[in-house]
Image (cartoon, rainbow, N blue to C red):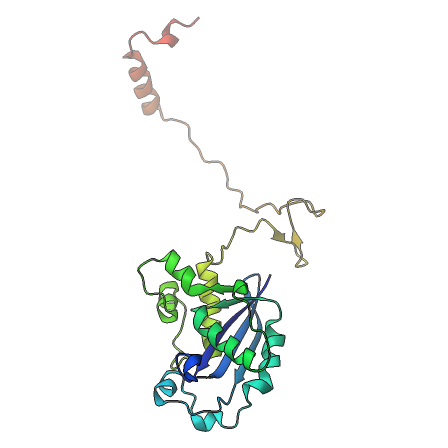
Length: 234
């Protein structure tokens, strides 16, 4: 199953106030595991970036001035995500900006039904606990020390790890398939003969015979049992 974890950075909190996208980052997953394919797009928002936004993501007006407009790169974004399920933290925020930008270039927008919101997942799994990305990284022991600023690609990479943990984490040792010497896998019903038996060291038998003192103590104990069935056996 193909999924895409994505995040955005913007000039402000709401597209209805005229704020725009400045960065989109995305990471591809197959079977919930990152494949190594990713996408990072910077965009000129065609407006100034407020200082409070720069303080969050570090993307200045000077840096963004030379970047393409959203209308020039949105097809790269759509090509990358394809028809994959989208994994987003606080999806309403990112989807609001993405769909506003897409509709401005004549695209119908992305359907909410294809989105998994990891914020909702975290709140259901850990009710009452902080559910922002930093808090979840700390909870799961994910290294976020490189996160000096919010960055769409870095946050997507971190979120991909958080998502796996929210799903239950990597369950090592539960796969019944065993690798053969050639690197292939043999399952329980494979032509290769089934599961590979465990190779355990053979240990010599240990001496367990009772001593004379132990035998005498045992005989004395039996003699003290009244009405023992074995005393009347033929």
